[in-house]
Length: 147
Image 1 (spheres, rainbow, N blue to C red):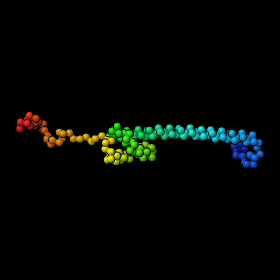
Image 2 (image 1 turned 120 degrees about the horizontal axis):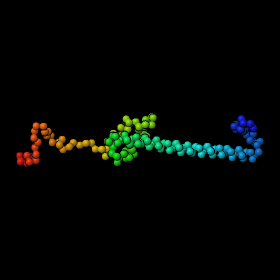
Image 3 (image 1 turned 120 degrees about the vertical axis):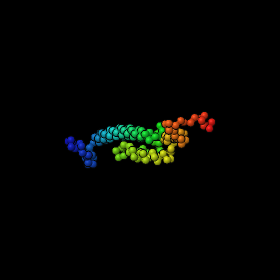
Image 4 (image 1 turned 180 degrees about the vertical axis):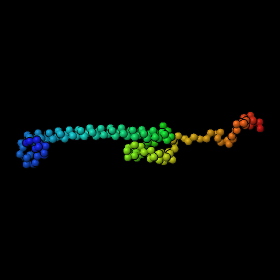
């Protein structure tokens, strides 16, 4: 057989004419070659899985940073990520779509407000209704009790 014949699959008639030893050798070589391809495939799949985990980690970190910027408590970031599917908040480029993420966080805020920092409340001075002008003397407790 010349080089062209070796690269082409032999026909059934050609195989039938080969001695059993040659057929056994061809079968071993074919199985070895297939085994090598299976090994390479497993290695590539393992690399793919490692890379996918790394990308998901970066995407999650991006979401966590965004959530903290939207007043999610540090202690609740993991809980928020469990409630919101980060994969659904990604754009076509695999980056976090901030508009979708903001909408998801606002929806979550209505059902889980304890995940977020409390809105600043007005201090008691704001509720008194009294304003002191710069020229006015403010009342002390003594003034109030003696009145």
